[in-house]
Image 1: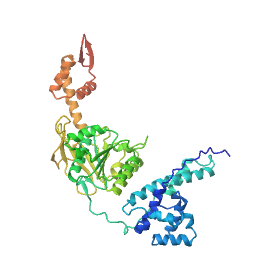
Image 2 (image 1 turned 90 degrees about the vertical axis):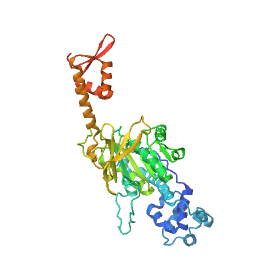
Image 3 (image 1 turned 30 degrees about the vertical axis):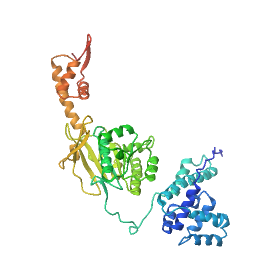
Image 4 (image 1 turned 90 degrees about the horizontal axis):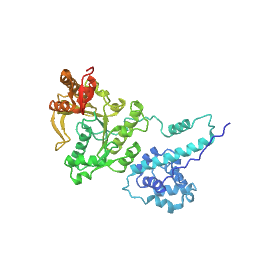
Length: 453
């Protein structure tokens, strides 16, 4: 038998003050005990031995209170082992106004890490490295900790109640909305405009989670949209975006609207967004945060390459369709002509389909972004960015082929004439490549000529 090379695991310590808080609140608020017993399934969650003993007694009490707890501990001969009455009184030092839900969640997260490490350490000492892989052992422990299934009686499920909206019927609170489109469709401008409008309307707080945009860039955009200093203070930016960071920040502070720009910032390293299990895992995190905190979560997703008006709306986004499947509202944005763009409501599980909204986006204008009108006749199949680009490219090819049909032209002359025809430099370059136009130098001047000339 080959010896297993075991490196001792450094255990994550639990906060004794937090443990006392979790044990003490049910003594002054007995209605909290069921939540504690549902979340904490093993006395080993408590690092302090005295707290393990107190928990074992506490979970057996139908109506917990400080006098009853002390009497039972005394009857079982455990009172000295938990520090006596003086130590028990410390459990009552915490105020009734404490956020028990958040404290319990924080306790469970910390305790589970230590509990898993202790179990893993114990198993590794018992196992032969050849017989079982460490990954198998850890997977087994995690299955014991969080079974992948549960049942619930619909009679005990609370009523959902009416849907609240940040922007009805497009962006519901307590749910996840996807905002999708091509890179130049103005998704970030839309998200910032909606964030500012919400702050102005109700004075709420907004969290903008992104590693794609610098905070100074976002501030500049919001200022150009008309934000005051007080309104800027209600919009916070999270950088270094991970699932864990997002969850900790949202649970620590209340937000009405949370924007994730883009949703791929939440993917773990090397995770493939085209895999449905990856999409479901990311969306599960966002849905849980929205449900627990009551915030509206707006996640931005880019369209995949090659998308056009013939692509099914539900398949346009980059990655698995699992993102769309788990969202309760999906919004698509894109051009409907050379100067106008539109937002189209393509999925609406919680309410009626909202009318399409036309907007103007011109970074050089003041303001750079503005909603212009409703256009119910515009649908998801009407906003194919590639279709418009293709028409422009075909027009540029026809123009360039005709221009060079009589012989070579100087590049400076071609670009000047193209500008007068409304052909952008990028489209002109694509037309040149498509036609295989050759560049040549005549003395000090560069010219273009059709291939073969």
